[in-house]
Amino acid sequence: MSMFRQSIRRFATAADSASPYGIRVGKVQGTVNGFTGAIGNTPLIRLNKISDETGCEIYGKAEFMNPGGSVKDRAALYVIKDAEERGLIQPGGTIVEGTAGNTGIGLAHVCRSKGYKCVIYMPNTQSQGKIDLLRLLGAEVYPVPAVAFENPENYNHQAKRHAERLENAVWTNQFDNTANRRAHIETTGPEMWAQTGGKIDAFTCSTGTGGTFAGITRYLKEVSDGRTEAWLADPPGSVLHSYIQSGGKLTERSGSSITEGIGQGRVTDNLKQEINLITSSFTIPDEETIHMVYRLLDEEGLYMGASSALNVAAAYQLAKNIGPGRTVATILCDGAYRYADRLFSKSWLRQKGLDKAIPSHLEKYAVL
Ligand code: PMP
Image (cartoon, rainbow, N blue to C red; front, side, top):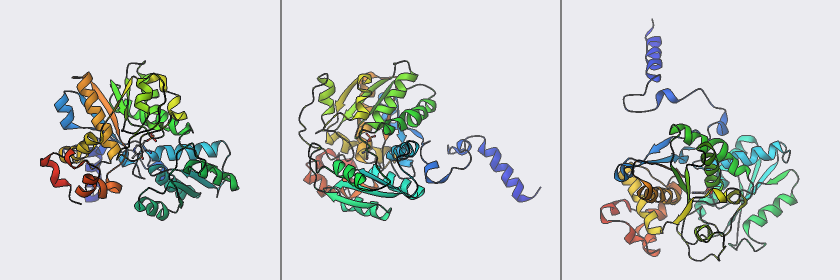
């Protein structure tokens, strides 16, 4: 037998079992078709330190490993597939969306891979880095004044009107288009359940459009016969925690948070569909979120954005409430790469009054 064949055979044998260093060699199956084929099937990571500390099994779904870098790749694919299936867009058409970040990035990637044009409206308060990234992914970007949803000049309404002015164009409407939530009912939820062997006692995550939280909650509730608890984690300045705690009273938005991509001033259609399934909710202060950004890096080697850290802070709190011996899952939405100049800058954190949130032994990471 040639050396080459022998080494192939050795590899095949190794591929059938876990590698000695724990890399999932045997689990990788076949090839995938293009960018969209690489979406999903992300690992579920045991967060070792906080699991050991609480006596629970705490897992984070590694959505930052999607090919566009965030949980929103799944929703981007689903809203475009939905438009195609409903005959709303033909080859060469244009996808238009209002988005401050990851959805736009996911859409821009999927549009390139499918040959559609992509137009993005966003509040002009967003960083130049995000605008540049969307443009280099081939999107046409319109930064517009940041006004409330009720105002007709809000970025979402401008996106809708833009699509109406064009031939062969769709406003994907991520906030109220329930194809977004369906992505998580059909993919993220089933993956998480299978990965834990059907053992998730509680799930928690924050919401922007609500697609991720509502979709996963729906699936987990159904598959567990209602046993899995679903806790909504809210940043300061979002109305959902008080909406849930008050049994459905919507208050004015007040306060703000450093977390990007999450927090809501209203109950979107994606969330409304599953509002009765929610066990309860909590608010995670920015201090806890920042602390967890640094803990995840220091303890787990995970370089996570603020919404992921907020989710883990929520899972940690939940584990302490319901544990020990229970399994708690959450979402690691994206990495810290696009937010590094904020999250790891001492002067930025000081401006936000958050520099004291980092314990002195973790200050070494605030190097920017
Ligand atoms: N985290 C980040 C970083 C995001 O960009 C988003 C989407 N805006 C979310 C969390 C929330 O996801 P969803 O829209 O599914 O609620």
